[in-house]
Every structure is written in C-alpha cells, then in structure tokens.
Length: 114
Length: 114
DNA sequence: TATAGATATTGACAACTATCGATATATTAA
DNA sequence: TTAATATATCGATAGTTGTCAATATCTATA
Image (cartoon, rainbow over all chains, first blue to last red; front, top):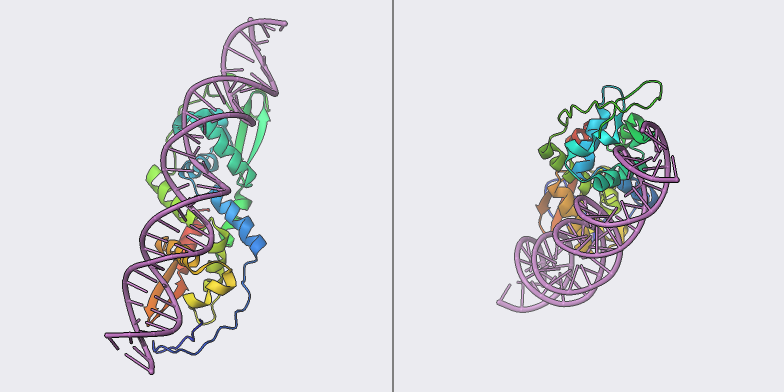
C-alpha cells in the first residue's frame, strides 16, 4: 500500500503511488556498487591511503606487505581488487610492481555521492 | 624485501624500506569501510537514489518495495543498513516510516575520497 | 476488543569474501 | 642454467551477507 505525504504530520490513507522509475539504473547501480565494494575493506583503504600519499607518486608492492601486517598473498589480492576497480594503476618494472593512485577515478566516484 | 624507486625505470636492489606509518589509522579505516559497505549493494544505491531525489524530501517505505522489486523484509533490511550508516534518516508517522537523505553525511564520505 | 495493514525481526540457506599456506610464475644475478 | 627473490595464483576455511518465508510488533480504525 502506498501513502500520501501530508505536511502537518497527519496520517492519510490516500494512495499516491504512481511508482515512477528509479533515478539510478540497475546497470549503473551494479557498477557503482562494485567500486564501493572495492572500498569497503579497511585493509584496502589503508593500502589506498599509503599509495595516494606516496611522495614519489608511486609505491612498490614490496613496501606494502610489512606495514599492512597481512600476508603477501593477501596484500596481492587486495591490490588486484583496487586495480580492477580502477582505483589504482600499476606498472611492472623488473621484479617489482609499482602502484599509483588514480585520483580522477576517486573524484568520479566521490561526485556520485553529490 | 624493499626496493628503491629509481626515476629512469632502472631497477635497483637498494632497500628504502623505512616503513613509515600508514596515513589512515586502523580505526578510521574500519569506520570508513563500514560506510562504503553500506554503499556496496546495488539495491541500497537505488533506494538511496529514490530517497535522495524525492520531490517532497522524503519517501514512505511503503513506496519503495514495489519499484525495487524485492520482498518487504529485504527492503526493510537494506533501509536499516542505510540508516545505521547515517546515510538516511527516518521518522515514523502513524503506521508509516518516512525516509530522507542525509546529504551532509554523503558529502563527508565523498570528501574522504579527496 | 478485534481486525487490517505497515514495518521489523527471525531463521535458514546459498553465495560471496578475507585470509593464509603452499605453490607457480617471472625476473635478475651468479 | 641455477639460485634467489618479488609477485600472482590455487585450495581450503571461517566468517559475512543478500534473500525470502514465516512471524512478530506496532498503529489506526471499526
């Protein structure tokens, strides 16, 4: 049952329910939710904070394992998720992989929250 | 093992690893991750989009179930999560519960993405 | 009271996820 | 080629989560 909004806090049983369609499409919702999923883990947020604040603009993956205090496979897993969400970029140089933030991506996500 | 960032893409085996501390504290990371968790589901994002764009500034829960296309308990569950994350506010008036967005909260979260 | 309807809670289940040890792959050096 | 090391993948497991049917709770009305 739908109800009518009444300004003076009275209650009405009149229906208003012309169910207009949803502003955010299902497709857009899925995509946005995927990015927020990538941001929904504290370990990933801390990784992102390290990478974003890197003085040289980038950080070697080898310098992330110890401070984060998780195993190397776990850190690798989280970095992959951040990368696939477009939140970080990476470049392999020799044996090492260097990560850098993608601020445009973060801004784009932030702007979706108005 | 840590490595030194070398500008010309050469590879060095010199260690740089004075593991400075992480910009985002564990506590802050937990809190932020909790909000992003609330935003990490497409159904909740669509609910939020309906509530945020309400012409009257608020929406009755009874007008959310049908458009979302999920069961009433499921919608109730998602609304609770949005509420507990501080993303929406609610007011019970009679039998109905009215939801409204909390734009300050969304802005606050958005600003954490720089 | 009793009934009807809106919302919340419970219980169960399937799907997903964070984590780690073990292992594989890739790259440089000896 | 062999050894050493950085990173990725695999397999397993414990914990989390989205969903619904059933049920409970709350409120207005007859």
